[in-house]
Image (cartoon, rainbow, N blue to C red; front, side):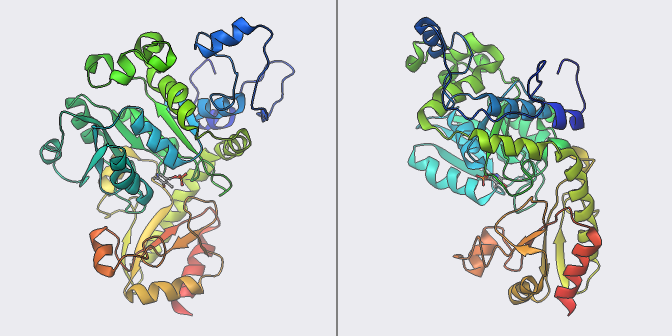
Length: 426
Ligand SMILES: *Cc1c(COP(=O)(O)O)cnc(C)c1O
């Protein structure tokens, strides 16, 4: 799109601009490969001299339309789809780090990402220090080392629902010559655009609100193009020095602001292959077309449900950053004045046993290992995702044994509240 459009228009029209006589809906380019007439042209594609399509593992027109849409929504310069949110976070870090390097991440991040950073990456020689996101900047600053290559956090953490002080973390990262990577899955660019607050790279699990219908697992990495890799040449030699696997290409010299995404695509995707399928990209695009309509409704419903829960005597506590009085309300107002997300957590006075009974009595709010779906879903981390932990270990992991994670959908709020009421009372 030539002129800058607002977010809703990008959700509907971004990424795919058909020319005269071309399909109105984004086509699924269901082909692993693309045809050329001269051997020389194919050679130029392999040398990254031309950016036409040649192998879906590196680029596909359906996938590119969807990544372009997400890129514009976030205000970035380049983006790449991945097969999952896990792959997006893995590649986002691995594109900057190698054995011997170190990253800093907030402790309150998605469990799968904690595991990736503290168990799997260390096996590859990349270490991670977890920090309390609310600690003073001076304290977090002490965790930087000469080999630190990135800082990571989640806009709204899943399931802790802490809100990241993006400006604080961006300043910390930049003062130490490294980029800030923000997982913006829960807020989505409809509610927060981390680049506007200084983040350098954004990741998504598109599996959540972007898809929105619990259809496809997927991820995306978006680069703002703002981080000056050359200014820290020796830290990021993977980007600033010749890549022997591409005839000595220097990504920063050849691709400028697109260096990071080009390296992620042409090197990591080539070697590791966590590609998104064009079929799934098509479905993600259908989800994206209504993201700007669904997010406000998720937030409106979640606030009503949070207020209702807060008013009940048998509810011991409620966490929702959109709820006035919440520990993260002020930060949420700063970074997400139009709304946060649809996920709430709460505990019943009856604790763990009451949580299980409550969930069993729900009628249409279903028990699922999923969040951010258009349907309301509920999970008890102590009995499900974290069931191997004792109550003591749960508290250490920041998961209250009574915690119910409630992902408020876009049904009618009064029906969701009535389902909760009858499950607590009848
Ligand atoms: C779900 C989730 C992930 C992992 O995404 P998958 O698509 O399930 O691999 C990463 N980060 C956050 C914040 C998530 O909610």
